[in-house]
Image: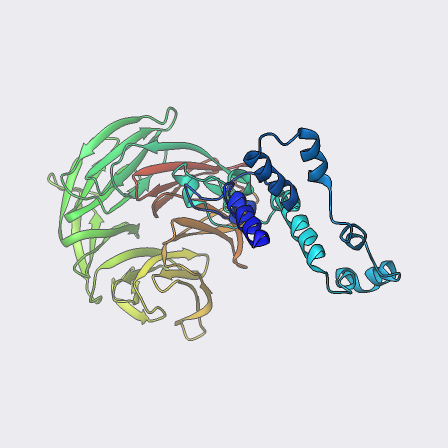
Amino acid sequence: MAVITTTRRTERFSRTTPPTCKYWLAGRCNRNPCKFLHSLSTLPSNVHNANMTYMHLKNPHLSAEKMASSSVKKPTNCAPKAFKKPANCARKAVECGSEAMSVEKPTQCEQMDISIEKTESVEEVATVAKSPMEKSRSICKYWMTDNCVHGDLCRNLHSWFYGDGFTTLAKLHEHKKVVTGIALPAGSDKLYSGSTDGTVRAWDCNTGHCVNMIHLNSEVTSLISEGPWIFAGVKNAVKAWNIQTGADVTLDGPKGQVLSLNVGNDILLAGAEDGVIYAWRYSSDPKPESPFELVATLSGHTKPVVCLAIGCYKMLYSGSMDHSIKVWDLDTLQCTMTLNGHTDVVTSLICWEDYLLSSSYDCTVNVWVRTEEGTLKVAYTHTDENAILGLYGMTDADAKPILFCSCKDKSVRMYELPTFLERGRLFTRREVRSFEIGPGGLFFTGDGTGLLNVWRWLEEPKVPTS
């Protein structure tokens, strides 16, 4: 009975100091607070010391000399066995590895020594945990809110981007909601951004300060520039400003929100919520009330038109919530074919050389190529683990084509074409919804928090030769 009582008291004593958190040692503990230690344990070096400390507390008259001598004393039948090895142990250890060491079943005393060895090896475990580990390609969500307790041991990224060859320059945060469009008119020293907070802002490119704000009393869901004109898609209309003359024009006609804008063949095209594409031609002899004339409405989609692209054999491409892509002749404004390569909303379209690239909520990017018959077929499909919200393209400092894919997981993947080799990632608190290319290797991203980020390639991009 005395042995049992002593064992229980030892257990009670050992519980007064909690053990070191094994998840903290591995850099993976996400509890705050955690009931285990986030530091190296200061437990007694062996069970005998713990027992004697308890005895000393119970009997304060016990001499220090006796306690010290008792704390190092071990049973006589344990000392020799603790270091006993077979004669051929060294040879077997070389031939068979660590398994060669376990050659006989330990006695009860040896088991006690083994448990003590495991307790004292906490420092070794900590050393292993501090060794360099392979970082994941995801940002730490606790670091984003300044709550990560792992520091350098965290396996996730503590940075807003990773990859070589580019860096962030500035953060412009004045919008209150999603930045849905960014425009940098040629020859202008102003950057323009539109948001669902109902404003269009002008930013000084030299200072980064907002120098003008236009209230539209409606969500801005698209924004582009062409020459001296700025176009903003709002509900039931397109707003237009001439930054040189100061002209302010409203183009009526669309039904619902204007979700996409583009210009091609001197025609302004607007994809609307009613599934129709509206086309205005700029008049060389403008009328007093408006220099733009509505020349056509392109019907065919059964749901909202969310993206437009122009290029690839002088064609207009439209993507819709009806999961389809339609191809239109820019001269006749007639639909020539319908592409059905996605199983969800077609979110973005870009033309790159002779290829058409399309993205979708179905987590794929399709690369379309023209066949000998003049139709388009999918030549390659890249699959991601997240829904893809937008595609944007530019070249890096070495003139290599880079595809930016904005994903639902609040990241932007950067792929080198045509291999789709990942070059890096950008991270934001909310999804990136807009992108624009600037001079001198600059590019801009706008996200769901209203933040406009300014990025730059470390060397100025070279113009590819044809």
